[in-house]
Length: 342
Image 1 (cartoon, one colour):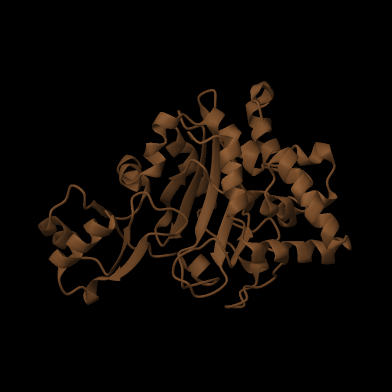
Image 2 (tube, rainbow, N blue to C red):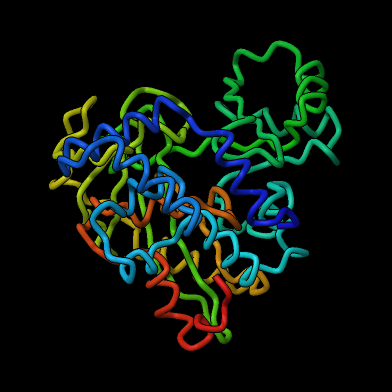
């Protein structure tokens, strides 16, 4: 995290998606009756004084909150500083490099993988020999980018593929995760991503938040848009509203028609325990967002994130709360939280 918070915020400002911004403003206008000019000015004020991006502003419902309530929500500026305090930069490579991550946490992966950086073409061919589908990944890729799905029966020349993947930097090849029927009933086209956030304090990791992310359509890789979000209790039942990026609430999945009230996902408690246990291996990174999938054999680790998207877990429409993710963090850190300069 060498970049300053101010420079990072300015980069975020330059990268604004104008179409999404306008849609958020339109939604806030319809929900509150406040003028679009007022909303734009209030967004800018919160950006300048709190480092609040337009997505934060919408998801946290800042248009309706008091200053004290706003203080409990993670925003880009505060979150950046918080993680700079909590996470030791020299250990971030463990999470940022998928090759290192898979090796350290391989007992939680539930699938085979091969590192093309140190493996030969012959070893790659042997790896593929009993596989049906694999995923080639850039070891530093994020957000679903740099991933290629490969059907093994379509591969004609493994030597050529080996060379191609190495040249493209897709050095990690993993066996496909076979998703549990609990989630296939909602969306069978993609392995859904379950974000579990753990926080380390005084020799112990705590599970402080979670959010399931599911595509609305038949895309084969989870993206950062067109998703639905909800949280799940340890009993496997959805314990929040199911919402999209613009705060619309869903009773059923728009593609499959599955009623969310009927959803029960087996293995959620085991997933929580797995992430808490795994965190003990890297206490120097005190805040981690783990991505978990539910396979036919139970929950499995996908990856860990040192800067996970906090918006998933503090969307105001999830539970109609007027407090945000920083309160969940402060509840664990106690007096230490007051020492952090946010």
